[in-house]
Length: 340
Image (tube, rainbow, N blue to C red):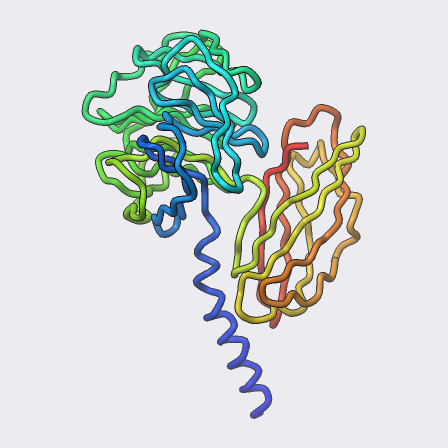
């Protein structure tokens, strides 16, 4: 009985030690309008500066490549996700007031509410059409990133819109809280906008907002300019799962799932029980054989799981969700988006 009680206490202590880390798995890239680039924790609202960049009108992500467009300039930048340095890609023909992306393309709004596509290789802008979005007078307008749908958030009436990227036409969804928009791990967020400078979960069906946290940290200015997802890694219980070494040969996608222990104690007996791939019709797991035992991961170290996936030719992106257990039957689930 004493031994069982001690084991139960040990398991409880481990859960308490890891609980804080479990709440910090929604970290995205963020920038203000005055040249501060960093990361935003969507669960706490804390912005952490990474680097100084040119003043940007928003962020966009295609695959694992991060982009930013100069605020009211025609310059496109590629931003290093490791150190935040911005390298000029090229210039277009319009001054961009709001910038964002779908999973396959970059887009900008000019001050007249016109939608433009932006070439990720050259920075050249191509006119699409008039959105008829309200002109922001009391706040800003924003475009989303991380979603197959291009959303717009307008600061004057706090409206959420879906934009047709073929015609440019914006359709109002509803009213909630305006702000920089990002779809992270299946949830749409708005942050750093109006009327409250906070993080809100946005219902993509109604536009309704649910408060998460007040915004804090070392960004500058009243609002954020843009957010972009962290597509290939997630942290749960202090363990970071990141997809690295991605390679495609024909229809065979190989990669390594890197599991890093950020805790002060060893994570023991980690085992992956299932791996779900989406779209399921276009991706099949070839290796590893499941369940897969990773074993123990010491503090500050990483374990690597080699993986092989057979995919349909031309698949632009897939989602992978790993589920399993560690220590005394603690359940975990990780999710990443992968661009072959």
